[in-house]
Length: 299
Image (cartoon, rainbow, N blue to C red; front, side, top):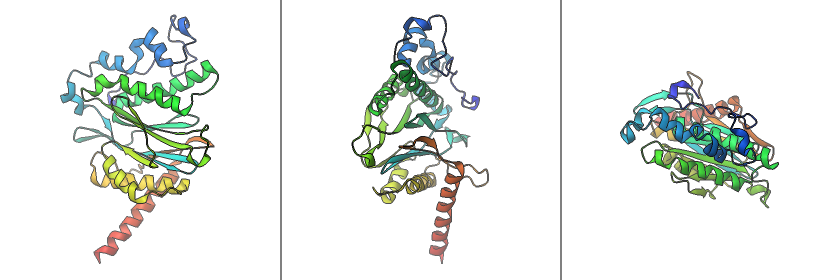
């Protein structure tokens, strides 16, 4: 992770095929990489790293001095799902960075977005990605989507102590459920609370983070069950624009620096990051339309 976050130290290795040390062979058949770390290298877990660097020294009062990610949205469409996020991280009333990455591909058929304490949330998603890879290597098959949700919920629950001191880290998970009977409903969205409770969003869309109330209001007006993939991306970008219009912690399209939201799309073809050019085109289309509406209304 970037040092500008005052970030947590990275895991010793990013791949499960690497050893953590001479103790790593003791339980090489444990299918949960998180449990493996908890048993043989607990100091590598995000929670232990937070404790070690003393991030709790300020308690809840000091949480505002740590960068926080803001708004993430998800939109399902027949045969897939779009996940998008703004790029701003804030530190109290200051902008910590304008181009943070908040959307991550976690495996072939899933992606996660993050809101809350940036350092903890990013480390959590990195560990979750390794968790999924490790499970598939040990078991020979990937986790089901419901299994992935359960693993991530457990990680969120493990951060409850930090969350109660103002350092909450909340993910939003989307996935393509290859086991679902109806191909048009395989794009699924899951949100979590700080205690690790999971919620499947059956309405076809949701948002988390500081601008979520504005993003949801926008999506409520724009969403249709029969959206195409391109339309789902377009309304996700538009909802982030609306969130940024009312929430100072959410970053809108930055035409000067050419900073636009990030997005991932998960479908039968797998999970992929949406090309920056496609997101820029969607953002510019929103700006042009809103500008025309404003100028027309001013006459």
